[in-house]
Length: 85
Image (cartoon, rainbow, N blue to C red; front, side, top):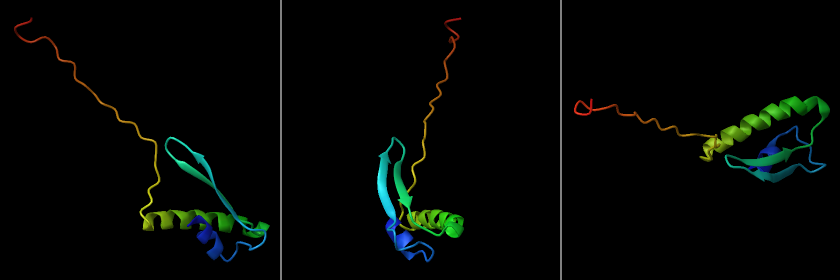
C-alpha cells in the first residue's frame, strides 16, 4: 500500500527507485521507512500529500494506528464499619 501511494504520486520520481522498508517493531507501533525521490522544490508538497494519503488509505482499509494506552484502576479503600468503630 505504501509503495502504491508513492508510485501513483505524480511528483515522485521513477529513478532512483523509492524505498519502503519495515524499520522497527515497537510495543505500540510498527514503523516503516518511506523514502521517495523528488525534486527539491517538490519535497514539502510530496511530504504532506503522502502523509495525508497514508492516513486516508489506512482508514479506508480499516488499518488502525496503535497509540500507547494505559489502564488505571481505582479502588476505594473502605473505612471501618459501624460495628468496628
